[in-house]
Every structure is written in structure tokens, then in C-alpha cells.
Length: 154
Image (cartoon, rainbow, N blue to C red):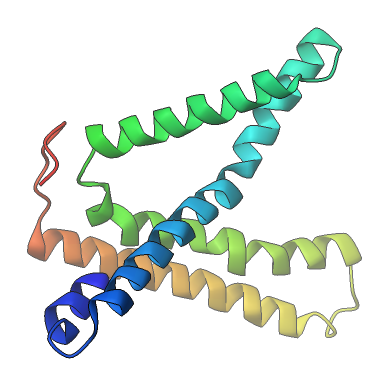
């Protein structure tokens, strides 16, 4: 979106608005990284507290976050072709959000025979959507291809 904004609207949009948009994208990226990485932070702290039988100090929690941030940055630099695989990875992850909760509800609640049809339909729709996304991503990878360059972001 930023590329399209700069390409098509840079001549009729003020520099302030373009800069503000870029800054808000950076803030959004940093914020979403903290949100989506929270399960990793919690898991690292859980491992520490279960092994040491004491609470995790603040400086070690900060160290875990810095370590994970540096590790994620290393992966981004080492594997710059990962955005080409985003559709494939996203399609594989879609059932976790769309299908599994419906099926888990059916297993946990154990509803009557015909009262769970809505959840079966939603779960099945999530699986079909996932298969469609993975098929489209594979088709895109096959037709366009992937330029694999390790440690050479372009």
C-alpha cells in the first residue's frame, strides 16, 4: 500500500501526509510485532519459571524480548524470500483461526445431532477456504517463481 501511495499519489499529496503515513506504518508494525510475539515471550518465561521455580526478573524478560527481536530480524535478513511464501504460510494457518474453533466447540459442547450444523458448515467453509488459498499460493509460486537469495535482500 505504501508503494502505491508513493507511486500514484506522491504528486498530489503533501510530504507531511506521506511521512505521517510511513511513520504510522512503522508504529503499527512495531506494535503488531509485540502483540503477535507475546505467546513466544510467555512460553520463554514459562520455561524459565518451571525450571527455576521462581518468578522471571524484569531484566531477563527484557532479555528474552531483545533476543527474540534479534532472532526475528536475523530470519528476515537471512531469508528475504519469505514474503513470496506468505500466501502459502497464511493458507496453512487459516484453519487455526477459522475451522478449528468450530470443530473444538462441537467436541467440547457435544450438541444434539442437528444443532451443530452451523458450526460444521463454518468449519468446513474454513477448510475449503484454506485449501483454496494454498492452491492459489502454489499456483502463484509455480507461475511466477521464487528468487531465492540467502543474506541478499533485494
